[in-house]
Image 1 (cartoon, rainbow, N blue to C red):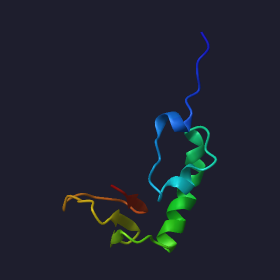
Image 2: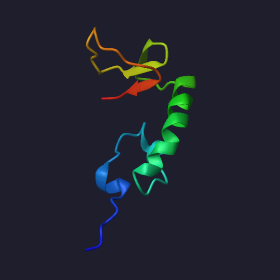
Image 3: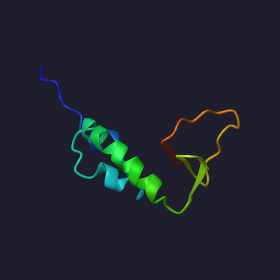
Image 4: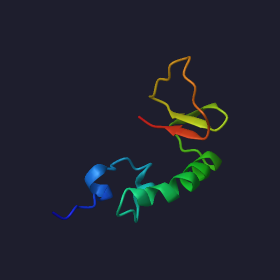
Length: 80
Protein backbone atom coordinates (compact mmCIF):
# COMPACT_ATOMS: atom_id res chain seq x y z
CA UNK A 1 0.00 0.00 0.00
CA UNK A 2 1.36 3.40 -1.00
CA UNK A 3 1.58 6.00 1.77
CA UNK A 4 -0.10 9.34 1.20
CA UNK A 5 1.72 12.59 1.90
CA UNK A 6 -0.50 14.85 3.96
CA UNK A 7 -0.94 18.32 2.52
CA UNK A 8 -1.08 21.53 4.54
CA UNK A 9 -4.70 22.26 3.64
CA UNK A 10 -5.69 18.86 5.07
CA UNK A 11 -4.17 19.72 8.47
CA UNK A 12 -4.85 23.44 8.79
CA UNK A 13 -7.89 25.52 7.95
CA UNK A 14 -6.19 28.90 7.98
CA UNK A 15 -9.06 31.37 8.05
CA UNK A 16 -7.05 33.76 10.22
CA UNK A 17 -6.09 36.73 8.02
CA UNK A 18 -3.01 37.33 10.16
CA UNK A 19 -1.57 33.90 9.32
CA UNK A 20 -2.56 33.60 5.66
CA UNK A 21 0.79 34.96 4.36
CA UNK A 22 2.61 32.27 6.32
CA UNK A 23 0.60 29.51 4.65
CA UNK A 24 0.89 30.85 1.08
CA UNK A 25 2.72 28.51 -1.30
CA UNK A 26 3.09 25.80 1.35
CA UNK A 27 1.71 22.66 -0.20
CA UNK A 28 3.14 20.47 2.55
CA UNK A 29 3.33 21.28 6.30
CA UNK A 30 7.12 21.08 6.39
CA UNK A 31 7.26 23.95 3.86
CA UNK A 32 6.07 26.23 6.69
CA UNK A 33 9.18 25.59 8.77
CA UNK A 34 11.50 27.64 6.58
CA UNK A 35 9.11 30.61 6.71
CA UNK A 36 8.33 30.83 10.44
CA UNK A 37 11.50 32.62 11.56
CA UNK A 38 11.20 35.41 8.98
CA UNK A 39 7.45 35.71 9.64
CA UNK A 40 8.08 36.30 13.36
CA UNK A 41 10.94 38.74 12.73
CA UNK A 42 8.80 40.78 10.33
CA UNK A 43 5.91 40.82 12.80
CA UNK A 44 8.12 42.00 15.67
CA UNK A 45 9.44 44.83 13.49
CA UNK A 46 5.88 45.85 12.51
CA UNK A 47 3.36 44.47 15.04
CA UNK A 48 -0.28 44.22 14.02
CA UNK A 49 -3.08 46.01 15.78
CA UNK A 50 -4.80 43.81 18.31
CA UNK A 51 -1.54 42.54 19.83
CA UNK A 52 0.24 43.64 23.00
CA UNK A 53 3.95 43.18 23.67
CA UNK A 54 3.97 41.66 27.19
CA UNK A 55 7.77 41.23 27.26
CA UNK A 56 10.52 42.03 24.80
CA UNK A 57 9.79 39.99 21.67
CA UNK A 58 6.63 38.37 23.10
CA UNK A 59 3.36 39.50 21.51
CA UNK A 60 -0.06 38.34 22.65
CA UNK A 61 -3.37 38.95 20.94
CA UNK A 62 -5.49 41.21 23.11
CA UNK A 63 -8.14 38.59 23.94
CA UNK A 64 -5.60 35.97 25.14
CA UNK A 65 -5.00 35.35 28.83
CA UNK A 66 -1.59 34.21 30.02
CA UNK A 67 -1.06 32.69 33.45
CA UNK A 68 1.02 35.10 35.57
CA UNK A 69 3.65 32.43 36.27
CA UNK A 70 3.97 31.26 32.65
CA UNK A 71 7.38 31.52 31.03
CA UNK A 72 7.41 32.45 27.35
CA UNK A 73 10.72 32.65 25.55
CA UNK A 74 10.99 35.24 22.77
CA UNK A 75 10.46 35.51 19.96
CA UNK A 76 6.82 34.47 20.31
CA UNK A 77 3.45 35.45 18.87
CA UNK A 78 0.43 34.02 20.67
CA UNK A 79 -2.93 34.24 18.92
CA UNK A 80 -6.39 33.23 20.01
